[in-house]
Length: 525
Length: 93
Image (tube, rainbow over all chains, first blue to last red; front, side, top):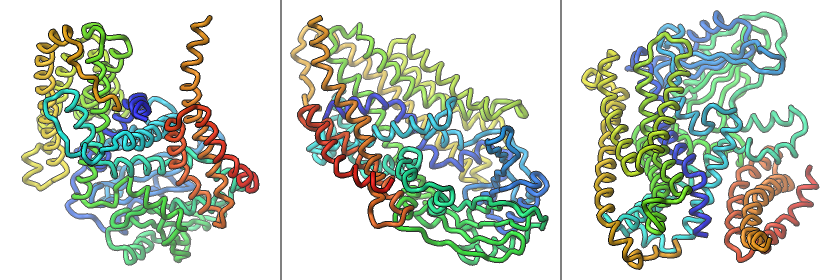
């Protein structure tokens, strides 16, 4: 059981570490997106959503006349622009084409800001990675999550003394300290780690376990019954071909506001707008309810008449909706979101300490510590690049956002390329330098990049920290100060790693003479 | 030659367990996600119940495979659970 924990943990540990860290920052995805589009002014007040919907809908009528479907995500407390996507004529038959854009709530026009994926990049990377087909990425993420689930359960079984272990911490004792850190982080966050892993699998369960669905439903109409339980998107039927202008969407959103509150309309979707068969669905926002189950009002797009209100789904579908919402945490207010962030961060540290422990534990048993075997060196170097290197790469992504010129051809892609180029460089660096130096140097590099980021922001945008503080712009001020906090954390880690390096070097010599002194580390673990 | 036989003998059970965990576990989870359709639930609810529970079954199967004493026992356990599920899954698909 303990070897199952070790090997399941190690094999996908690097993937899990990256998923954990990018997932953790994704709790502030919308805030990061705001920070990465500094040209978009902060919304001091949420504009009336009915008015915004009408403006964007009118604009979409001009940009995408004859589209079979558009969908608008309205601005809210965390989003300072409206986001919309719409169907376009497919390039190849059988394919579905989509276009998307951000819209200014004040004018309804497309916003002109630097081209960037914003926080969306970390969010998507978290479950589908990059440079590979989306489905492969999702399967890889699913495999990693499944390994994580097994690692959690087998980890609990391994630690029979789980609660005693939680109160045990042996500082400055190298392997013991790593073990204790790994245990404390795991046990304290255990309910969260278990929840987040299981619910992560639930978010993509239809992909991972399609067999029941395939056995139960034979026709598209039957399948439609299932998707109606999961999503508020109404499927475009056949257009009538008769042109009728879309009725006032502002009126429809107003009815939804009366039902769910002024700022609690999440998404407005129209199918066949401009046709007599048009339908509009107005979906409830995600704030204030721990469920992603569809709740929406459906209107006749031509007459504006309310056709139906859907506010509940079946018990299994609701269970799925709640689990899904627990994973995304979008229901939470700012305090709750910080809690999510902190516990996830501890989860990241749990995976990180576990990975490091693998090498710390084996280093002592090496026949010749100066020349470890290949597998050991590989794990050691991959650890450096995937832990310290990822911090550098993620920060580099934010640097690229500020430094790349705009306009630039496929600028959003280049930000992402910058992330991966820097990540590969950290791996090369980890391969050529001695392990200890590589750790220390990369941790310092991450610290320096994070520390300088608010300075870079002050130099390249109109929204430096002092300005944000005076304006009470907590999104910008918060991200600037978070960078400094993380810079401090990396500096502390760098200093501790460097110190430990000198300490263990002085210990190495007597160790080789008296191998008995190295207690075989509690066999069971 | 003898060393090869020795190697197969020593690594064989481990590989067998890994296969049982990865594929046997998934197959069992998939099978139960279909068998659940035999429950008196509406189809969409039954399908979703099957999907929701499948990961717990998968994880449980993996733990079982590595917890028991021999690879043979690991496979036997998976089969014993699978046998009553098969006719159920057959009846609904």
